Image (cartoon, rainbow, N blue to C red):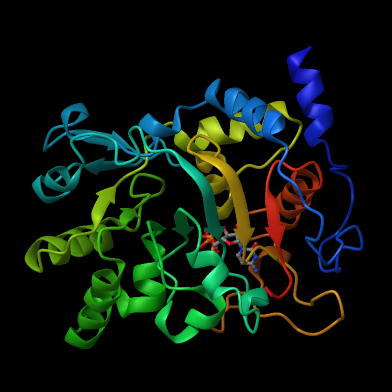
Length: 319
Ligand code: CTP
């Protein structure tokens, strides 16, 4: 019965075509929101049947040795050789072991954050999770500065740091990592082939500059497990976005999860344009078939969870 109960709790109508439209089901306010602690506990238990975020958040040193060959998670026929550098940066124990927080912020990268004034509110959480090394300093009023856990898809190195090919790009990158201080830097290095040179270069820079970030590399089963969890709740997401992965992981550690910067729509509720990212000129890729993600479906799911008090989704200005 548990399964059916939970599915109906999370259920959204998958056949809804909400691509490109401002979702009318979304009330532009979080007033009156209250956490539903029993639902939070139930979701945590349910997620635990698929993955243990404490363990799956990172591969640890003892599970691999230099020279081991790994099959990429999403391209099983292609392989990666575990280098000495990569192995030296695997954590000895999970960076999230025994960590529990009352409140966590998961910050997505939507342009909805611009002019939100949410920076201080975000920084006030006990644990702040951010995605893809998004810049903070220039946007601190709206997004805050604190970062306890930061993801970095290898593709970001090409897109935002010129592949770390020249000194200026490398300096910019080191500067960004230095600002993260002792944050966990979470690098999905084993998903698809193509980013291994970037990961190697990032790892070299971390070692050379003695940066204090704590590197973590998600386990080989994480994405499948997260997909499995949502699938049994009748939500079919082939490639969960980083934001959804972070929410799913956070259910293990956080009593209250507050989401900011989730708005995968080109217009806000009053019809004004919203940038895809708050910090660059990237376009809305999920309208094309080339996009691996289904962010509008994810959003609808998260919105349903918001209404039930499982998480709090903020898409308006913070007061
Ligand atoms: N996000 C959102 N609306 C947007 C942009 C992002 O809801 N307009 C959320 C998504 O959950 C996304 C997260 O914020 O995963 C971080 O943004 P981004 O760095 O663009 O996400 P990725 O999932 O890494 O996208 P990709 O894998 O294509 O790089």
